[in-house]
Length: 58
Image 1: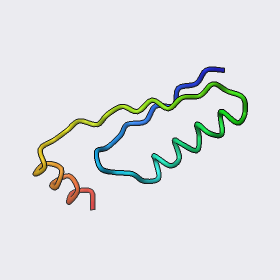
Image 2 (image 1 turned 30 degrees about the vertical axis):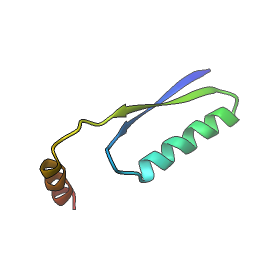
Image 3 (image 1 turned 180 degrees about the vertical axis):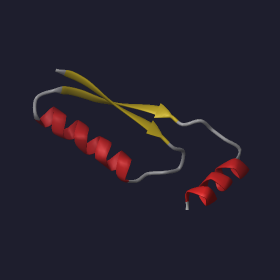
C-alpha cells in the first residue's frame, strides 16, 4: 500500500512529533508498505512573534 505520512514542521523545533513520524514511516516500510513522510513547512513569522508564541506556549 502507498502511504503518505504528513507532518507540519515548526521552524527550529525537533521533538516527539518528529521522532514519532519518522518511526511510523520506518515501521510501515518494515511491514512492506511504500511509505513516505511529507513535511509541510510552518509559516515563517517575525522573530518577535515567534518569541511571543514561545512564551504563550510555556
